[in-house]
Image (cartoon, rainbow, N blue to C red; front, side, top):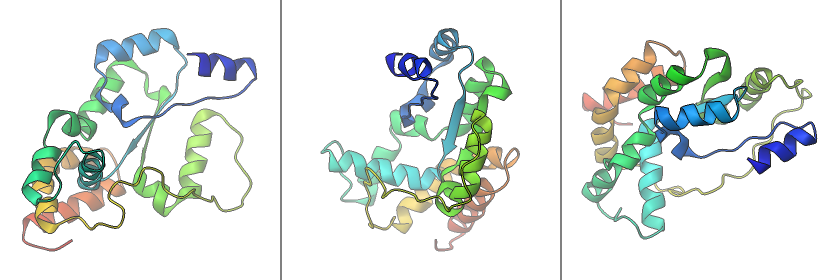
Length: 195
């Protein structure tokens, strides 16, 4: 709260981020809404299979999981806390039960990676901030990269694709772009294709 009040006193816009916000229940979201009824939420969705792999490797890096086998990785990825962070359709339903559509902006990690200028422009517009100059957006070096360059095992991808395909199909009814590509890749994986 201090972060936001200090920023407002200086005429600035402040933000805060954590994937754990995707797990907040409606009661907590209502409390957030009461604290600031003008809050703007930006919900960034990442390919759920990639997100699960990153989470497994992050937990292993901290000594909280065994990612040395595909079975151990899949077991960790299926734990309730990990699943809740990728249950995007459920998160969207909870957000929209509390906040008006004008206060929520949906976007995708893929767009941050593939078209950062367009994503930056859409976020600034949503926040009511004047657009930045036409210079290319320079993304910082990734922070907290758990998996590094460690490729996702095909068996892990197939297991997770089976888990997440129904939710991704749900997202495809609402969003173009990345969810459509996720669905196509998951369907290919489940039909015996490679990544």
